[in-house]
Length: 129
Image (cartoon, rainbow, N blue to C red; front, top):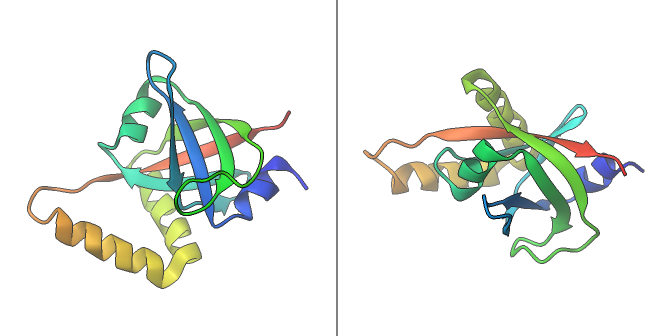
């Protein structure tokens, strides 16, 4: 089993991004596999998106919904998708999580109604050791 297979099998992924000073920040996220990459969707102005704009280095681990890591970490490179790529990432993640994705998406739209909500897809390549 490859690192990609191991990480893609989990329900949640601990995505660790890095601040400019090198401080690590881990966040549990939903993920979906798309070929040889993992896909994540996030708010365009989230902390993880901001951190990924200045460094593509990430660490990944399977985790619980609360972020407690349940397996060893792997290394990877992440890039933010363009508008078309984000639409594709949304569809891949939505296909995996079904009604849960639709429910959380609806709640997000209701919470930000009138303030403009934009999301961005994150495409992650896992670096094999």
